[in-house]
Image (cartoon, rainbow, N blue to C red; front, top):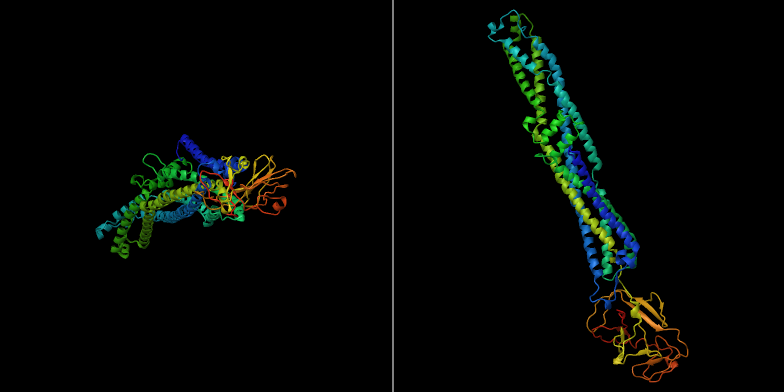
Length: 619
């Protein structure tokens, strides 16, 4: 990313855009696909359109229909993953990113404090150095003029002039007391302080607030929990219509919006994670890692950072392990050594003058040495101050001290906490987004299961000895009485199937019969040998003759009894044990308990007792 090769930079940027585009396009197309499925409706998209599951007729399939159960299992697993990784997004991702912010803040504060101290020391060195130049000039005047016209060495046995010459010579080595270097250093320190303050402002502005995460995570968890409850209720056949409507039209759209927001944020975090990983593994040759990236950035921004400046050299020096031959601040070390020597010379000169005595020197040389001793004292104080400041500067610029801050700032903050935090953020949001999209696509799970109606099967006759392949047959009831059948004039069977719930619609058939489909709510149980089973969301029908002419003759066969004529045919005609029946006897009676129709199967079935209507007759 920060390579000096423009072609490499372009290739990296292209790959970065490509990676982000793949993530965005994948989830965007998925979102459009869900919307298209909704528009297609249940006829073309089935339950993926958000409509009820529709179970096919069990007679048309060899194994039990388990799609609703399988999809609900997937939905519940996705729900658990959404809740789990939403929590991990906070406990792992958010906490690690907070550590990045804390580490950056602490490290930048330490660097800022160090830079401000260095600036104060630099200012003190410059100020004292400038005053020392004038004092040094006064000392230089003593050379050859300390005690003119008198052989002081012969009198006291000490060559004072030689000591003065050595002291002034050592002070001359200090030149302008490295004022030029210190001015350059101070300028670079000011630039560093400005950069640190800018970075602290950026960190403060981008700092993650607790409520940022809560605004996203809490609604996700709440919506997921509500949808899980709705699914469980539908699964155990205990759902409420109002709760299904709430889940479908309120909770699910809100959840969908947060999921979309989640994968948008995930895409941005994914790109950021790639850039962060590149920063932590950049560089060339042996300089790999964040330090290599920093050097590359400085190389790229030569216009902003003078390669010969102390800031540029200092950064390279510290991030590359403080190689002694590349220390940009060795002038401070040399300056401190020179100050130590100058201090020794001044101390010796002052000590010799004090041993001789200022009064005696004045008598011997006929000169007042009070001002001279004061100049030496002033120079001593200045050199002591300069030496102390130089040592403080060396302490501030100590490699171990700066490198410790660098390691904490980059190795620990930028390349440990940030990598871990961004990885958790990205992976958690990826799981939440993927599972959330699946949950939205499988939103039919909290709706009751419906069952398909095969119109062709509605027209099949009741079974009889002459028609063993018929779809339905009659069951005998009380005491094993023969099953009754309705026969029209042509010998075709007319029958009634007892409804178990309210009718949904009415269809008029060409043969003069009404077909009443019914839907019944889900019940427990499966088909076992020798018994009629209750199944999920059973549909039943009522079929009865209509529009019969008054003089049309119908025959009723009660299983061996004589036939009788009816003027009118009712879906529930009368029945008695008498062989002869009249119209009057048929009116006002109920035949509900005579028999039930139920489906044929390879298994045998027990008959129902009177009044136990079957609810599985078109299954």
